[in-house]
Each structure stands twice: as C-alpha cells, then as structure tokens.
Image (tube, rainbow, N blue to C red; front, top):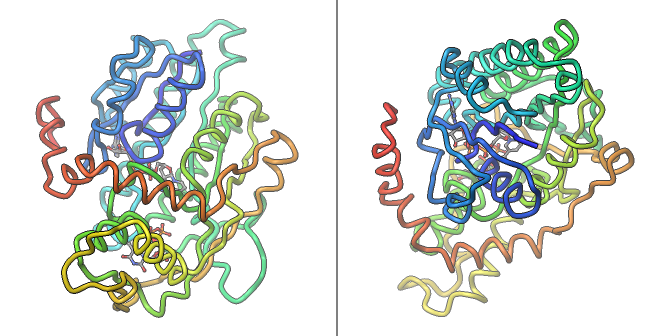
Length: 356
Ligand code: NAD
Ligand code: TYD
C-alpha cells in the first residue's frame, strides 16, 4: 500500500511514518510544509528507506496537492497536517483557520479529484483517514462522563473549533461525494520527539535547564494521556480495518491531573538526574502556578470501547511506563532537543526551500 501522510514531520506524524516504515511494508509519501512544528531530524531513521519520500508542500495549495496525487498515485491518505497548539490558537487563530479548515478542504478536493479518476476496484479500496482530537467534544467539567463517538461537538478553543470544522468537512465529503473517509478522535499524546511547547516535554526540558515549571491555574485540569506509538498503531489499524464512514475514539485510559503529571515527571527526574542544575535539591521545587489559559477546558476523557471491541486495539503503554520511556528518551537525545531549543533544526527547512 502507498500512503500519502500529511504532517509527517510533526510529532505524531513522524511517529506514524517511523512505524509504517519499520513495522509494515507500506510506501510512505510525507507531505509537509515544515512549519515551526515540522522537524526532519525526527525522520533520520527512515530517510534512507526506499519506501519513504518527502515532499515539501502546503496542504492549502490545491495545485500542489493535485500534482502530488497525480505523481504518487496513493492508495490512501492519512491526514495529520494541522496547527495543533491551543495556546498558539489563542494568540493567533489565523493559521489554524488556514491549515485546519482551508487545508483540509484542499486536501479533500485533491483526494476526491484523484479518486474519481481511479478504476472501480481502486476507488473501492481507497481511504481518506482524518486524524482529529477529543477537544472537539468540549469540556467534561464536573461530571464523570466520557467522550463517545456520538458525543455532541462543543469545542472551546480556536484550535478545537477548527478541528471540529475539519471533521465536519471530512464527513460531508463522505456523505455527499461518497469519498471513503474515516475519522479518528484521540486524546492527548506524549512521547519522544514532541515539540517542547506541549505540557510534558515543556516540563522535562524546563526542569533539565533549572527553569520554572509553569502550571496554568491550580493545575487540577485532567487530560487522558496516550503514548504516541500506541496512537500510530491505532491509526494503521483503523486504516486497514475501519468501516468506511465511521469514527473511532482513541484514548489512553490514563486520566491524570496536570499537577500529578508534573509531580510524576519531577520524581522520575530526581531519580534519573545525578547532576541537578545548581541550587536544586528536588525538581518539585520548580513548580510555579501561573495565570490560567483563557477558556481552559477542565477535563477530557475518552471511551475507547468501540475501537477495542470492533478493531481489537487498546493501548500497550500505561502512564508510568510511557512517561519513564519518554524522560529517558529526552535524556539520551539531547542533540535532538538542543537543535529545537536553539532553532538550528529550522536550517534544514531553509535548505529545502520553504518560505515559512
Ligand atoms: P504537530 O504540530 O507536532 O505537527 C503538525 C505537522 O503538520 C508539522 O510537521 C507541520 O509542519 C505540518 N503542517 C502544518 N501546517 C501545514 C500545512 N499547511 N501544510 C503541510 N503541512 C503542515 O502536531 P501533532 O501533535 O503531531 O498532531 C498531528 C495531528 O494529530 C493534528 O491533526 C492534531 O490535531 C491531531 N492530534 C494531536 C494530538 C496531540 O496530543 N498532539 C491529540 C489528538 C489529535
Ligand atoms: P497541552 O500540552 O498544551 O495540550 P492541550 O491543551 O491540547 O490539552 O496542555 C495539556 C494541559 O497542560 C492543559 O490542561 C494545559 C496545561 N499546561 C500547563 O499547565 N502548563 C503549560 O506550560 C502547558 C504547555 C500546558
């Protein structure tokens, strides 16, 4: 199978590409614009594979997308390219509207035009898998409920609202044009190669540099954490076995308060790091409560029963094992994150001619 992956230089996209190359026979075309979140360093282990190709392109650029479909003739699309950080969507929603809505529209139209040109059996086998988030369902504050596939949409942030809109577009293209679409909505991911603006790597790298660990509000907000390799495996399983037109919720079965996540990270770092930054006895002392995020959702939690019952997927990693692996990875891969912190990973992009 030849899969066109959008956003394959990002955190989850790169985990998916590494998985597809190492654990399957698939060919992968990675289409990525290399925004600040795209990092080709995360793909070093696959870049020499004859089953992997990189294409620098903006998914909003319809002619470019048409050319890529015509050139590569994929059997499937796994659509991950997005602006993905809630805080950035509050500071500047414009890029989120462009990539998450306009970019998904352009990708759907390019896929549809190509799909219409296929013969009957290739049309029937084609899939467009849209990768989305549990944040489209809104806030589970003050109740014990879980997000199910039929939970009504109620997004809070500009990020969540644009992802909700993109989900609606994908389903409309399925219903109206009969494009064979699948949608997944996943909880918070963590693991190696995550850009250090998200909670877990932000805390690990701040701690290692002796900087404050900023918790928004009182730190009691709850997220359901999934190790990224479990997500990559789930996506491939949905692509292969999922029923066309269906949605699958993917979750870690790992609800944690932010404060407990950060205390766990501090305890593991206390154990792993012999030479602590000067003046620090225990990393917990770096925790600092800061002004809350506007519109901050209190709780997300996924009911992953459908994907378990219908496709036989469940997470392998629990939070303790996953976070230990993640911290060990950041400790062993300082050159990767150092190039992110000092900005030198972006030189790769300039070399590839991106205008971003
Ligand atoms: P990320 O921000 O790490 O990566 C996004 C990638 O998309 C980057 O490589 C970036 O260069 C690329 N990109 C952005 N705009 C583009 C454009 N216009 N054209 C081409 N490429 C573009 O994101 P992530 O955390 O890996 O998330 C991937 C997907 O999974 C997103 O759709 C996100 O909404 C979804 N998701 C993320 C999480 C999470 O916890 N990170 C959870 C559930 C769902
Ligand atoms: P984040 O990783 O940004 O993911 P999302 O907002 O998509 O859930 O944040 C996870 C949680 O951690 C969220 O409740 C906000 C909180 N948070 C902090 O308290 N401090 C931080 O520095 C960051 C980045 C997040």
